[in-house]
Image 1 (tube, rainbow, N blue to C red):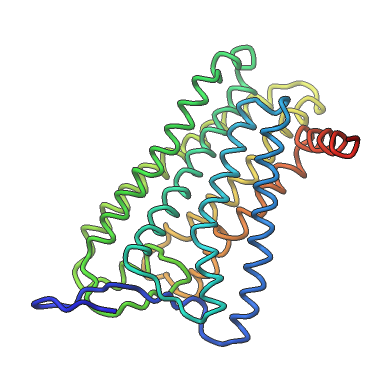
Image 2 (image 1 turned 180 degrees about the vertical axis):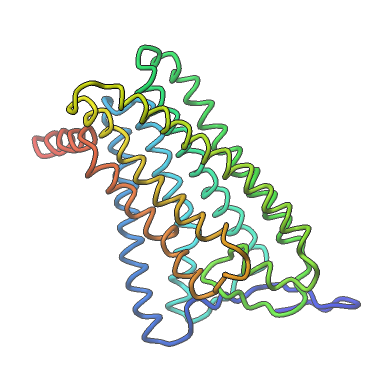
Length: 313
């Protein structure tokens, strides 16, 4: 739907093209997305409840992990239900306001995850490099401050990007070559010069992206140097094992985002971008609970305790 102005047509809704309009492909994608979303719900809600119920997991590391699961759950929920509806109905129509809200909420949660991963890296740095100061350096007040900064920074960055993107005039085609409202296909639809907007968007993203990535990188440089100073191989392995889950999650998350958003502009491909987007909308929220549970002895022990309590009643 379009609204006629004096000299141009204003877009009132967008059409998400998704992966195509072939019925068999839509049915296959519906099954894939449905199973993945159910796994995301079960894994992340289960981990949130486990950490909430088990008092031995009420430490900074697991408090951050509980919020990480919440953020994963939220940003996948911002995208997947609408995609599932499109696969069933074959209609990818989304209102202008709905698209802006999806864009803002998804971007805010995704950016918050960057900040949470940086906070978790700092937590591991303090635990490994300054263990005697851990209770002071990672007190309840510090944890609350880091969590607040993560959410505030995430949504401030998202608000800037949303305002810059949706203040652009969309007076031409309204078909978004994606399965959700993402920045690159939306900017392509604008009927005016977008270079200045793109610079603001890039600067806003870089402030968060570079600062969080450097925090993680510097934290792990100090962690690795501290591990190398441990004399026994068993001690080095035990210390490093406390960081492997987080390091695995960081590598998958930042690797995907860097490839997605920091590639040279001529290399962008609509179909390729959609496939990569599946990684951080479906795969990452699905595998994060597995990474932090299957590779974490404390989480496995907490799960065993809860199961014993449940079945003994």
